Length: 92
Length: 275
Image (cartoon, rainbow over all chains, first blue to last red; front, side, top):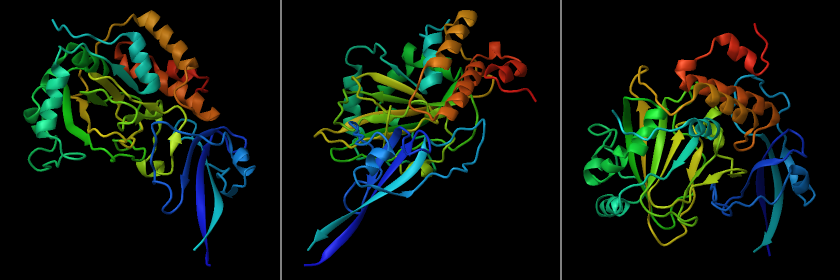
């Protein structure tokens, strides 16, 4: 038996840089498991904020930069980016 | 005298806030089926048909292959909405038939335009659905309010579903007109039927193109100010929301050039200190 570890990533874009900021967008990424970049007509949002995902074992591997370039007139992307991971183990 | 059905102040304000409008023009009986039949016969290639960039970059051949589309474009409510939003004369600069076969679709968020910051409506995209599009047929998905976001498409690839996204599950004959910068995508066609959508781009022919809509300049602006201040479109972070209000008002004034305010008025609107 050989154990394989696969990293599953979850991108969360939150309303604020806080882990309690409301989720604006959420997507999962893992090689061979999730269709990349696919947006669904009937979306699911399993977590309301980053803290709720952490409570279920997700680990934050990327926090939004608190020193974000500040422009008082421009709007660019939506939300603050958090990246979380889970490691899945399978045997073959 | 044109018999166009122009937009009204409420519709113009809706476009400014959300970045799109849904129209249901009263096409004559049988027109949608006629267009669909012509598309199926002549343009049923998977995804987009190849485009001859050298000889037909705007892909106007689609109007020869599906001539009933000319009637869609000439409808007073369609032509009138374009006259209100981009003014007359306008130019149709792109024509695509998006034929989405079963199992295809599922794409990332993108903008069609390059990122040029402005607060006006110079160009719109129009999406026409000749048949009912159910939620499993790979409907277009729009993200309201994102026409104000100056975001390169590459930066959008890690977004998945976004709260407030609008799924265009639409009846046959629906026409959606959207700001050209609006984030949009298509979901996967999980049905057994081909899904057709015909997209046109409309551009102001020149800066003298005249916009007309049914407006009461005083009451219309009061209504718009109130909606711009209170109405949500999608979800913005708190600091962006203040900027959005500002952008909305600026776009309204740009649309309504007869009432273009002095710059001092703009500066004072959202409490922005004068320099």
